[in-house]
Length: 293
Ligand code: NAP
Image (tube, rainbow, N blue to C red; front, side, top):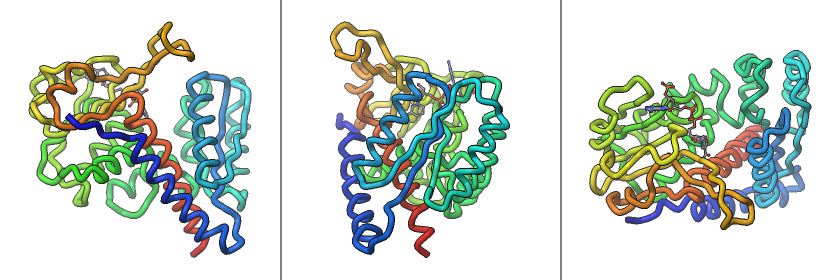
């Protein structure tokens, strides 16, 4: 078994991005790309993700800014914030960290984002372009997964891909990306969800198994074909007395047993997570380059 080392590949891509920032912007006296994040409330996981995105920005020479609002902000006020960010020429791209408080309709907020600044790739215009294989911002986690497969030269054409989970941010878009007429892509994709029958049998036929269910340790060795490629998107904080943070991260896959049977597997942490963040940087660089044209 080999690890699909997302941390290693993300490090490489960050180096590539930093070089582009230098050559295309800094050396020419231009402002570097600028990513903004909107953070509503104080959800610890959201705060951690936004902090990680800020750190990643500084590592590649981007400017980053965070717009923080209390959890009782109204939907109308948040739409004003979106309008402000859409109009700010110094900001190349921005994200609204999800989830939002229950009283705010996420779809309304996301649809207000200018698709040309939607570096999370969640706007219906970007999703539609993705389906049609047109240039667009790809959603960060699926983009990270296909980049990881590409960098490890894992063939997807003609393969049986099974995706467990159909969320709008991971399962559904990754199933579309891998079934598109492109490389990576050209796979035969089965998308499973909570009403799917015979999940074990379907998963066990996969050459490439992508798991995004949010169920810790759900995928056991009997669900995995020998020498399959396994991508574990799940992230779970498990309380631990052995770590400084007081928790350790686990995925949706029983790594111990599955890793003995498959050919490649993403670790948690250090697999899909770092690829998600670096994909957001790639989208922001693309947004900034569009301004150069
Ligand atoms: P989500 O919105 O909670 O969706 C979970 C999906 O799994 C749903 O489609 C659900 O089916 C399906 N599912 C749940 N239980 C099932 C079961 N017993 N059998 C079959 N299908 C089942 O999940 P998400 O947002 O995609 O996140 C999934 C995991 O990935 C979470 O642990 C999340 O923290 C992690 N994540 C990680 C990253 C990263 O960068 N590493 C990024 C995003 C998410 P239904 O549609 O029928 O309900």
